[in-house]
Length: 433
Image (cartoon, rainbow, N blue to C red; front, top):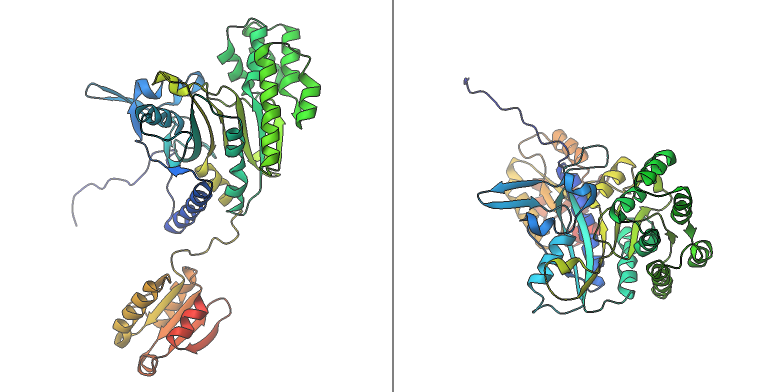
């Protein structure tokens, strides 16, 4: 025994950690999404987790500033990235002379937000983004292309999605017509409409200078949902402000491109504004179909002047994002995975003392032929080995005894049915593939 005092193992609240089989399942989800992005001609990118604070805070604003992890190291003022979009803008500005535009990239990586940990909200989580950056001009068709990525991403993991779309110019133009100087604060209030009682929202609007008629028209806008014709019919006469009308025009154009790309299951919802202050036009959020109450699991939009903080060039951007950690957590909680079985071992090899070396050779040969093979319960009894195979949800087991080695045959047991077959190696390979 030792007098050494042991440290209690623990982890920070809100930081994510999975068991190995769940991690394998999570990584398979990432692989599915990567394939979707690559199939749509987006290129991979990775950026540092830490950035200089003046870079990362260049255009955050609102409540988000309070959630950012910020610290100093020597003379450096540093922040952990809270999303992947601002680092993208910095990267593009630094490499504008060598990149081909429009520049289409995807990135999957961890981001950090110091908010209160609760169900579905983490301080460390993975974000999954795809963005397009244009030089001088970026057509609205790229907004539609980013939105079109949601359906195949969700389909790749067995889910359907619904997208809710708006354009920030509509509300921005309306508030502009009221001569309001509190645009950022008003947008933050709108973003809370689904989270707070109407009375509280009214009081917040009045505090920012809106009168009863202004608030009535604001609610008329943000409660308008439907197809593009319904949107135009409901709100077109509310304001003649140019920014307001431009927002309606852009939504109409976007709708045309979405139809051309065969995008389905979307609706225009003018309460969608997104929390980040850098969005300037199209904004959207993604929900699991028929499960909106679970909250948004993705979103994005147009940010026409984000790179303007870093470079004196007109660079327009649009991007989509999936909160993949939150999505995975929801799918586990709601039992949405069709088959959450062992993904790391397809065939278990059970040997005896005299056939251990033969088992290693078989395992190596199977792996070389692309089969996920592993030894099971080495040094344990046969009964314990079978129990371990069941516990690990291994679908196939090869029993390799002296007779099998002598005859060059293999006893294969299909665990789900308990059926056993004696096969040659080629027959074994065909059976499990």
